[in-house]
Image (cartoon, rainbow, N blue to C red; front, side, top):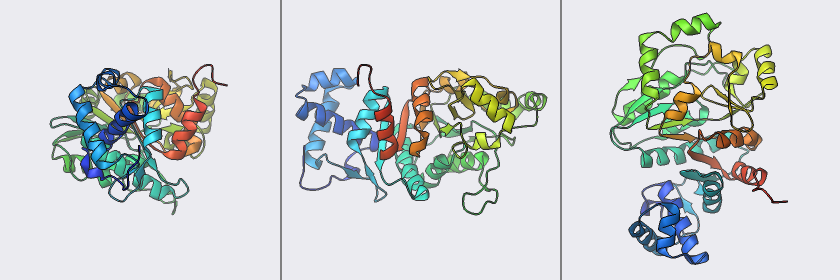
Length: 335
């Protein structure tokens, strides 16, 4: 497939439909599949297949800009979606060396994807992560929806100044609820408290009970993915040295919104869980769709664990991390 000029991203509803159109076009023109075969394989109507093929012919499917913030790597987006059985995968083609710019590009793509998959009346769950913070800052037009907080507040040092960052999980929930013109279900409690007794008492507070009850029925959750190593997780940084060591001995490879995962994706319960104010693995898994926005190639073991867990249904990431995931998760029998 080729075209004399770049297609306009405005031709499509959002990045997920853009990637879907590219996959349909590739299957039809490069693999020779019929429209009916494509519709059956991708579980969409043949009328939608026909429409997207027509749009793809008019626009030209090569690589598409999203509001000047970067380009979508269509090939890796499709390969990631197919390899890991994801609902949607959006890979942004941008360099990794400037993490601030990288987060901005990922935030824009994630904001576009969220606006595309959320419908009026939905409930959105948010766990604080720098990439989620970037997404909220760039969210502009959203269907009317409510927003719920998934984790407590965790003080974090600013990457440049070393001072404590002001924006918290409470702030991003409130900010997105303002954009969505809906209620915010939030609570003022730390992510980590001194001991299990304090955590148990806090979990009985009405606003926390209400938020966690709501969270289990969230239509879409948006989270980051942390690795169990220095510099790869704010939760790891906040844990005590004995807790870090205990997590490593238990096989913790990744964490999502406080849910610790082994390398094979199995959720793990560690002593650290006893003093967390956050959703459980069961509550997180009960949410209809879960978008993760990981970045940094050195996080690939953690992202693989998250993908293997089944807790991630949509992924927004960048080309170098996407390639690392594809290289290190070869199908069985591949040398």
